[in-house]
Image (cartoon, rainbow, N blue to C red; front, side):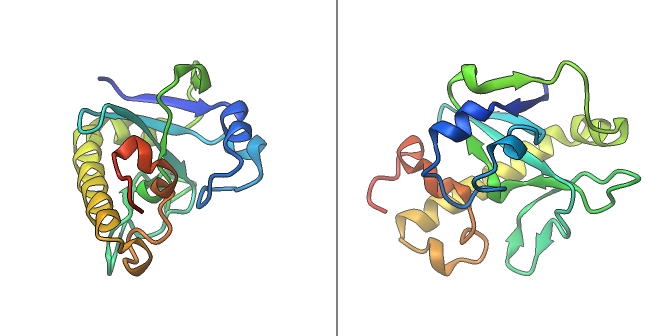
Length: 160
């Protein structure tokens, strides 16, 4: 699969107002204008969308990797944030970017590092699932703020 940059439509956020631990909670207008990278991982038959943030900061923290740095000249701390990934399996909520809204340096970085990003995210996802099954999400700093808490059914986690 090639790298797909897209927006998640406002309807998605309006349909899921009960979701917690999202970026820009309650601001579906802003949420629908954020660039996301589609990462299809065969692990769960889900389609994951990782948000690009202007200020990710350090992509590796003392408690683990939270994302992947994708700096630009103006936004040196920008990056993809694994903690706020969304699962959107219905394509009606996806709007593919026809005109690239990010600098070419960021786009080239995403293209160059795509396999690495997939691999890093897969490690994050497996760790999250392990923590959820052990009922340790709130105790693990790496997963405490994860939006994956909204997707336990899709991830096959039924006892949390």
